[in-house]
Length: 368
Ligand code: FE2
Image 1: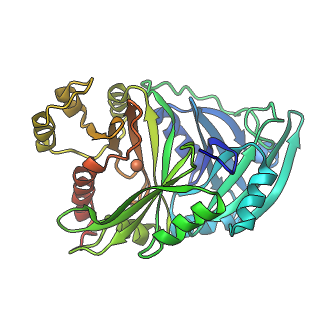
Image 2: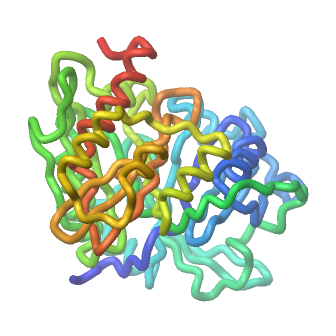
């Protein structure tokens, strides 16, 4: 059960977007986040602007460029469109975590460094993941401010009331990579951060009539964080993972799964807030009923909200995917509720979920 890197859990996830102010408003209004801190020209940041939002244990940073000179943000947006640029793990000791990762082959981005203000200091170090993503090791033990140095209280107060979404924490973060790259990234996580491979879905395990994919889940040995990795696999038509790679113009984060303690009320609230979810055929619930499963929820209630249910060894899970949230068919959210120590990823639902994604892929003219 060792966690060699001293990873305590997920921390912030930073998105690069075209207009941070409008996207922050969307996260507040549709997903129920609160805008807690801000970094912009008023506080000396002249070439980029960031909003820091939280919802229970979930922390998002939404960043945009303010200048053509900001190559880092502009080049990401130019290639990939809106998407996840980096995600952070809180670690016990940044220097130790970085040294372990670097000595085991991690590609360095930033050496361990401190930033400080009147509230104390934060330590961070950064390594590379996928084409243009980054993993941050961060520690706030010596900081008492809202987020980290450079961020201050938001300037603009907006009335952002919405239906309570009940979103609690990040459950897993999923990356999509090119054919034959999955094993490289499984190795990267297992070697540089001492993760273990937890699940492997090989050829034929996840496929629809037309397309197919391979998937592995890597995690810390104590299950603190989980990072599934998908790659396209050959099928009659284009894999949905290939569609992501084509539209994102590279590898990166496909979805973030967010845990809820009451998925029925979460999905209901999110729908009322305007979030669009994948649609599940009625036949899915007919076969769910036929299986005579012992679950707390009423299957007709799950059907009403379009929620999927899957059993595995230690319990069961309820889940649903949103449609892609941005302009390109790339990034989306999963809402998940784990019951009775469930540790799976909904393998029994893959068929229904991926067929649903495929129907949308076909509408976009990308199922070729
Ligand atoms: Fe997932």
